[in-house]
Amino acid sequence: MTTTLRNGAMRLLAAAALLLAAPAALADYTIRCGSEHHRRHVCSLYDPGVVTLERKISGASCTEGRSWGYDDRSIWVDDGCEADFRVQTSARRHEYGEPSGAPPEIIMGTNREGEVIFRNNCVVYYDAQGRRTKRLPACSNGQVRRADEAMAAHRREQGIGGDYADGLAGGPDFWRVQGVSGHVSGNRLNVHVEPSRSSNLVMSLHEGEVVRNRGCEMRGERWCRVELRDSARGGWVLGQYLREY
Image 1: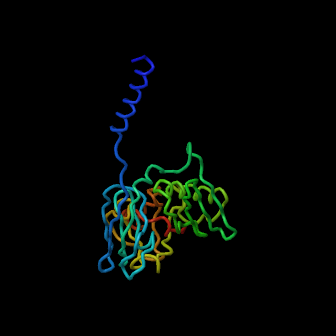
Image 2: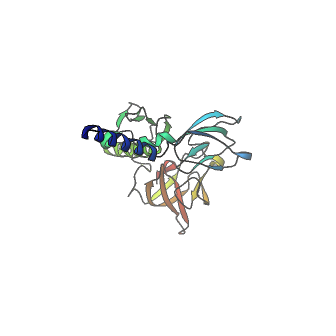
Image 3: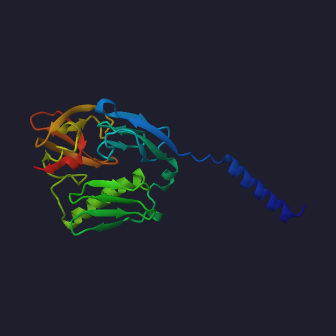
């Protein structure tokens, strides 16, 4: 066997060995999750990925961000929502969808509603107050986090709507709870031990209640740590329901 043929055979064997050693791609799968008696329920994910609603089972509505949502470990449902959810594990390979960390495109309408657009057909939508209202199925958790940060920074730079909890540091001394009536189960804002919807509850806050600001951070969604004005009791709440007091 000539040296050239021998080298070619060695390369083929090495390539075959790499293919055999490579881990198999995780398969997408479907999981059913339901809220019994209109109570919150959490369903664990077998493998993390991008979750989309595939088929609604319940008569109650299933609206992402209101009656269902997810993180890297679980899907949560509330207010009677029951549905089959598609988990796209392959989408994890496109965490940001942008080459070399290129920034996404931000488009603002004359009504102050906005869109953050990535190159893999992921679009995240925001209302006039800067609150996320919708994400396309192509969006990963990482892209949504990046979109939230990009939109918040853009609105600050443009001086748009600076009275809500859009920052990750600083901000006013106090927040006022606003917007929970008709949008949150029980018309009260849940206070969690950790910045996660699936974390244990400490207490709940009513519409108009004033709390002390202890800082905000991004955990898939914008979370703010707050305390009651007359005590050190507090925890983490969703920043979209806070306004400067």
